[in-house]
Amino acid sequence: MSSFHLGGDKRTSLADAAALVGDGAMVALGGGLCARLPMALVREMVRQGRRGLHLVGSAHSIDVDLLVAAGAVGVCEESYVGFEQDLGLAPAFRRAAEAGTVEVRESCCATVLAQLRAAEMGVPFLPVRGVKGTDVEGVHPEYARMRCPFTGEELVVVPPLRPDVALLHAPMGDAQGNLHLEQPFVLDERFAHASASVVATVDRIVPTAELTASGVVVPGHLVAAVAEVPYGAHPSSCYPGYAYDRAHLAAYLAAASADDVETYLDGYVRVGEDAYRDLVDPTRLGGWDDSVETWQELFR
Amino acid sequence: MSWTIDEWFVVALARTIADREVVFHGFASPCAQVAMHVAKRTHAPDSLLVEGATYAVDPVPEFVPPTSNDLALHRDAVYRMRFEEFFDAACRGAVDRMFLSGGQIDAHGSTNVTAVGPDLAHPKIKLGGGGGGCNISASIGTLTVWTTRHRSGRTLVADLDFLTDIGHRTREGTRADLGYTGGGPQWLVTELGVFGYDDEGHAVLRGLWPDVELADVERATGFPLRVALDPDLPLLAPPGDAELAALRAVDPLGVRHLEFGEKERIREFS
Image (cartoon, rainbow over all chains, first blue to last red; front, side, top):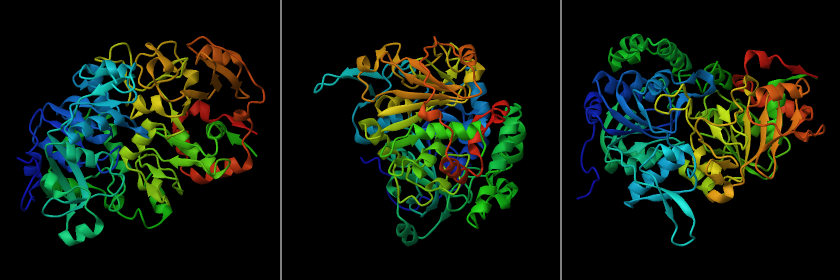
């Protein structure tokens, strides 16, 4: 029987969407760095008290840090967690990694890509070009080495990565779960195909005709549920709607760095998603495209 | 005309790029990011620039934002690679140069961007992580390695606590032994000087910034220092007007400063 998600109206509430992620699930987080992160779903999982998640993906920031801060993460298998030179290391992730309360299985973007492709293709492994002889190889007992039957060269081979669920945020979707994304898609397409299901939030649910005119990037048959959550990627960006909210990120980081993330969780997360949206500074959400000067100001 | 260390440093990085190279920077790399645009707008107009994290090809940003996955970095790009399209190109050897840095860098240009301390289960400092470097440092044509924290004495080390990205060798052997298809590091540019690499793949100090003494480098370097200074090293020639103009135009927010501490940033030259 097909693993595609067939039929009908996939619309649901944010709470019911997040409830599709079980404790201990392997979760792929969409977007990358501070762009198009599935933050509304992250916040809702925190509200629901999710535990023991196994996060997989490439380069991430407040999505991973907030889940770690709330005690929701058991294993972190990302290629980077942080806020680049601007806002620095990820404080909660760093503390948990150093204390050993989260298991860090350091990975590499290209390795994760190969593992997702193996899952998509239904093959038991794929080779990668590097990794061999690095300490990243050492923290992954599930990797192996294999001699190529054609060239004789020895390569690291990696098993499929088949997340239980991919959490994606898109600017637009329709009731059937078709999603339109703007580039860069990062790993979202690969996550969608390799995972058992996609749970999505979208800034706007639109008629299918409007969506197909913009282009469907993730088809509804991969999507189990879609919830309309305006500003669902905030405080990360979701262009063309909104740039990232640097002041909000800095406020989060100040709380998390002072080991006072509870204040942030009480003030912004546990209040509920509607209240969260009301708390967001509206001047940070629009106007990025008024002029280059306005846009630059958002980054100061 | 005067200029600061961050400006000269970025120009030196830019000069490691040859015209008609395909060149890439990772995220969290503001100096390299600005340098690629300086090269593109001066001596390397036919280089193909792949913006890290957006994978936009030859964008012309009006400013470089402090976050790497941002629409500002797509500006005027005719094409955006997909994530997998870039990594495939890098793994099959279609990318000529990448910029790499690290919390620790060893004599062979391997880097640690994972964790400081001997035990990954309980590291002293968990660093951000390596992005795609663990694979593509093995296969990209050549690497420009850089750091702005050489003077700390903790960055250029004899032994890495964790080897994330591949220089000229790992504990297991050389690039040839390991079957890596890329050429490895060509330059290591620091805020104290510039290193090349010898036949053994070991760093060799080739030049110093004018306000730096050899003793400063000796004090700050944890691996055995090999020295072959070239007083006319082109990388360290004073920046030209066009280079400074390009740099100041593309980086009005000064993201390059983010890599320099207060004490370094005041270094000024004329």
